[in-house]
Image 1 (cartoon, rainbow, N blue to C red):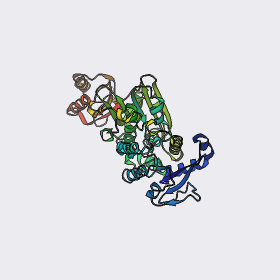
Image 2: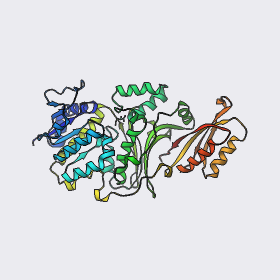
Image 3: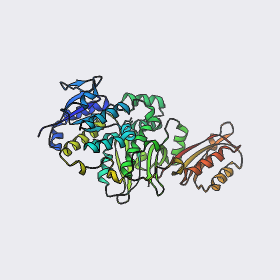
Length: 434
Ligand code: HSE
């Protein structure tokens, strides 16, 4: 059978990796796809020194690829929202299938893109957009199709996890580790997307849609980054038996869907608490299967290329199939998406770690306990670090039971208004994941 012709737009870390994997594993890929997958054209502004493109035609104009009649599948690896959207819509308009690793594009413009793709009967595949090389989209969309998904929680930003791991294990400075993550090609073009949780929120938005069958709603995701985490809280969390991870959590409740990214205390003995470096992991809990865990490299040249190439194989196999009988983009039939709302963060439920800087007086703990109990907030554990009294202030650390966030907000406001409490109360959410 004639080989499938692919046009790669973007020859950076992922584009270079995709070209290399397609070349190196060409025979094995053809055995799987039933035909060869050949790169017919590349659009790139620069050469990639880690990728020898030989005599493959290269253009600086991505739209030349989208308009090239020879090409069956456009691989969008340029990133960003604007130009990538134009490129993908142009490729779809021209009847081409699309493979993309662009989580920002899918999270923000996915509803529009999938609608256009349906009109044209083409596939838009995006496995590489979430958790690098881990086939978690396929797992949820196909492998767990018999389940009602209850919740999912994941470490879905490799850069952030790399930074937290290096800071905790080696005491390295935040900026220093971030610079290394950029050199290794893990970080986004704008690394605040990594450290402020925006990248993770893009990925969580995608996972939540395919898990719960709701349209993509990135604008409703709650996002909190890791840049304000202190070594003190990392250490107190350890002393309480927890580890801090930057987690994306999506949970289906009777009143709506929680969609939130934030630093999270996880019991240190959970497998996911021990996912370190650039590795990602996603836990998915379904009513039939129980809890499942997917683990692997979340960023990097060939791990991400692995997912791009798997999508290319999927598309190659589906080229001759009836467009109406393909796996739906968001796992559920488009006319069956639900209007279950995304909950504001104040309506989400979690347990909380609170750190209070209190004056070292008798009766302070009693005041703290009263404020919490008046709001129906149960304390799971409390720790007062007498050995760490500075300037007459003692850190009081406590972990609550699960409660609606609005109640913790009220309690924090009341705690901060006490004359015996100095400065802001530190609040980090806690998830047991059991
Ligand atoms: N910047 C992203 C990360 C790349 O660090 O996870 C993979 O999506």
